[in-house]
Amino acid sequence: MHELSIAQSLFEIVLEEGRRYRLERVNTIRLQIGALAAVVPEALTFSFNMISENSIASGALLEIETVPVVAHCPKCDVLCEVENLVFLCPECGEPLFDIVSGRELSIIDIEGETGEEDGAG
Ligand SMILES: [Zn+2]
Image 1 (spheres, rainbow, N blue to C red):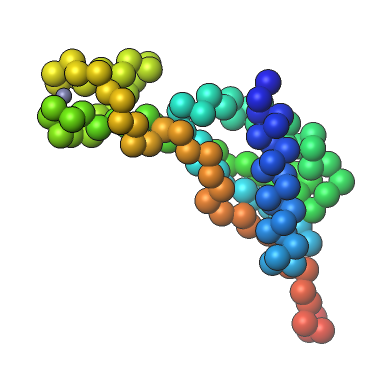
Image 2 (image 1 turned 90 degrees about the vertical axis):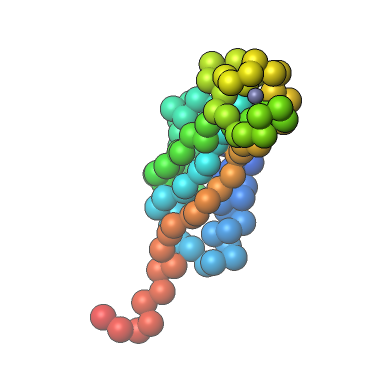
């Protein structure tokens, strides 16, 4: 289950960002995960919830966007979406080695609250 180690590094990044922006609470974490990263969103969410318990990110929502695998065909000079991990150009059948996207594992956005009250209220 490699989601656990991904959740662990994700958690560390979230804590780091949380410190940088002085967040008291993290509400939403938006992620982009390529289809080739072979991450099961449910497993990642489960692992993250487990790790982040009793932290600023406890109960945070993981919004996971799956990025399709896109490869470049050198013969047709086009980008084609790879489905079911068949790395062949749908037009000419050329093997596709030039993967343009699909390996992503990135944090797009972290939303939280700073808890600053400015004395008003
Ligand atoms: Zn082609």
